[in-house]
Length: 240
Length: 255
Image 1 (cartoon, each protein chain N blue to C red):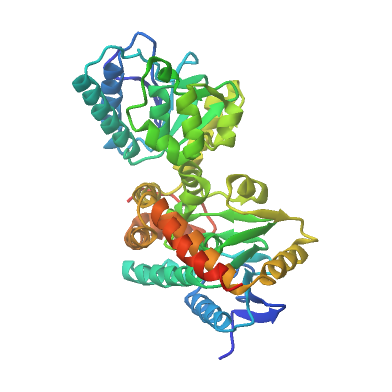
Image 2: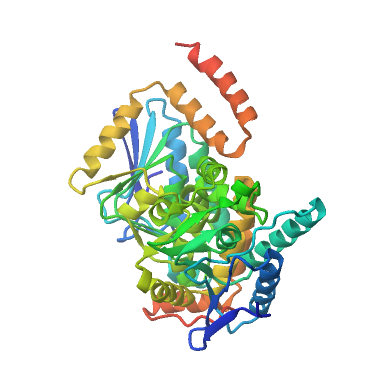
């Protein structure tokens, strides 16, 4: 089945998912979210793909939340289902056995910010504008942001971002730990591709195991985490 | 020490600026009781939309060092202090600590229970009472470690040294720094800006952030789904999204 809201390509062991939802903003509609789920599943089943890059490049935006024109009429039950669908995509990205790089090429707001946070690493263009504008719209985010943002930037900074609803710049995002690297506009894509291809040149088993262990590190106590590491490393490091 | 803290309320914006008069002679229990009364009077008051906590430049919530307590007294003070801080955290409206000078001991514990901290370049932060053999007792060890990381929290609490405003900004203890003479005006401006957003979303969001921080991702996401759905039964959601579609400023009621 073809995609309407995005395109996929695979080059040098890197699978690219490029959002192009047909407007400036790459709104995360129900269709877009379903296509993203399908695209991640497709790339994960391709053994030649070692790393996945998610971006809105070369468009103006990475992604924003749902279409407000539709959302304004949501009942609480609609909202619940929408939130469930979005969260299931993010869980799929986190559980995906390939490292996922978010290449934040422009505007990332609301659900788009949460989509960025579900990636393993975030590389941003210097013109990035990142925000959680829920409080301006009378809602909170429903895509795991209330849990992930405080862990990523600290509780107090997260509360400020939610309460002001204002956009923050690439520099601010870098300082607070919301993005990992910032690149100039002219070298952005080149840097993303270079970084992704370098990671993709490493053995997949080692990449997948590190991703699983690092995700586990957040939610397990140190002893259990070390036990998991011992078992994984025994298996992974002995195959070399 | 007055029954109520000196507070100036700006009626138009619903902003309460509370100045807490501390000092080295004021017992902690007395300061906490006054703070508690003030918090509960704000919590149910719908005309107040945001709270700024300030203090004199000599010290934010300065209080006497409690030497010579017997264990049950220390336990009672800790229990009471922790309850007051939980109450402050659950005040249900945005609350910012505005720090112009020294913020130490109980003062830092109060500041840590606010939504976030803004400060002037002259502000300093720390828990110096380790020199007397005393440790934070109102949730300070737990909130500090979660905010600045375990190592930085240990460095501050073991050494008892005060850190300056720049370092506090770097380690995420403070969100924003302003010039001393502009601090209160800038903090008011920021709070008025926040008060133009949906009170319902801010309240629900604050609760979910607090509840979700210490639990596993799955359960936190379940809480968030329910809270997200709840927002769609609020008038604030209708108003916020209608205003967005009509390209006008929303008028939120918090309902």
